[in-house]
Image (cartoon, one colour):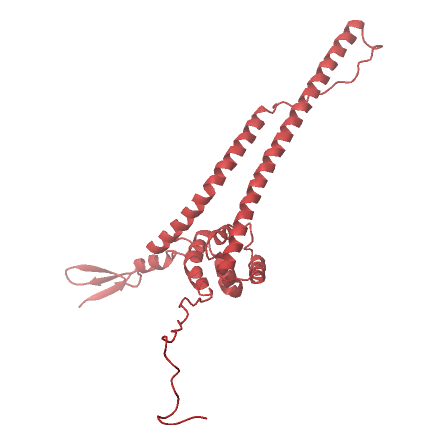
Length: 276
């Protein structure tokens, strides 16, 4: 006869004649519990991954933008270097403080002379400090003005090319202006990085027109991270926008074949019939 005993630790003890067998309780499944308690990987934990084709397009877009901006960067670097050199020449000390005019009635003759000399030197140093500061401010103002003019010229050239391209693509000026006002309300204005990509693209006006006509697509682009949005614009949006380009009939006009010399007009009607 065999007796069993259930312990508090979850073991079942069988009492036989010769041995005692301990069997672990199988109700607990640690592996299952640990698996359920492990945090699931979220979308934010996963890095953004592009397909080979998307990565190629992204690299081309960034490469073209970098190439076009390189000349501008060199000019800006030159202006920034000049500005840094000017800053290095600015005195680090503060403007000398000019003491008040000494009182000859409270000082000895020697004390008055020394105080007057100290004041004259401080006044001369303050005037020289103001002159250097004014010169630096004027030169810095000129450099900043050059930078602003450079940026203005670049913007004007992009807008001019963009407008000319719109004419080639059959987009009317009023259509382009209306489309631009719509995309600007969603934050895609001239200060947004994607605006530079659209202005530089040969189908930029069509992209603007397409986004203005498909606000859900526009919202989707604006909600994407910048690298994803750049790839999406250069692939899916550009392909859809290209469909807005008007179809041009390139077939040649039919050629009129002249009648041979001496050939009269063919008579109409049945043979033998006469017409009066």
